Length: 409
Image (cartoon, rainbow, N blue to C red; front, side, top):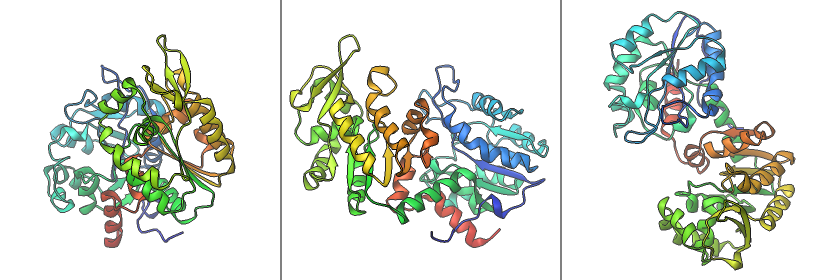
């Protein structure tokens, strides 16, 4: 494996130091701003617990949602959930970089954890400027003087050139947290030590970069791409299958139809390496599961899962694989009648001897719901960042870590 180009927590002494940690605990929340899934918080708890146990004053920086969206809320409940996971008090201040936040940081004792409020509440966070300008921002200039070390642990935000991702790394000694470290190690392994047959499961709804990702996988010698979810539905549509108005309306609402032409070309050029569903399950009038051959489409009902024949084909392919990469569930697994495809295929991966990596928030949620996450070799909450890094693209956060390492600690 290539020599590490960044520092980790193993390279620093944190006792008595004030450590600023950028995590990604962006979580599903209800209408009252209460966290409904603690997956990301639980993942980052390991880094925070280690720092606190070593006697650091831990200051947590994170975001929630996007401005204008319903989930653009405070991190107050996130801090409550974190405290429950760690089984210790976690402080919270409803401020990001103002006097209340600075006072709370100054009053921290060794071993204590403080969560600052949603960093995207601060206007500097998402400004479209480079790392050098971010380092000069009020956000960075306010918080950095109170801190001795910056820990970048949010790999899933590493593709964003935001102030909290790249700005602090310019002015503070910087290392990777345990989540970031694990993500980079898994990515390096899957890119450097691929054992064949190598298959990819491409599902879910985030298919904006799917055609580019499929082309990348094919160029890297992936043997088979198994498709499902909205990605599979879009590929069926792109291949000339008439899905029906209900399913087309979903694809249109998600803004995915514009990607159909290019995806269709990729499938046509690689018919033996991209496997499309041969049957599907639609949601009937009363929510029941109705399976149809693809040749029986279009349907007035929306497609919610792959069908039994497709499941059997995919499971058979998985059992022959030596490396499996999963990006997205294969159907609406949250509904019991349509969890079959995702569950059966993910279960086959978990029971196989293949080196298995899963990526993306919905993928991780499905694995946790089915209690299969621990059977995968690596499970990543990152979606877009994971795919971009895998495709060889430079991520702003990772580059910031490398640059900081070149400067030294």
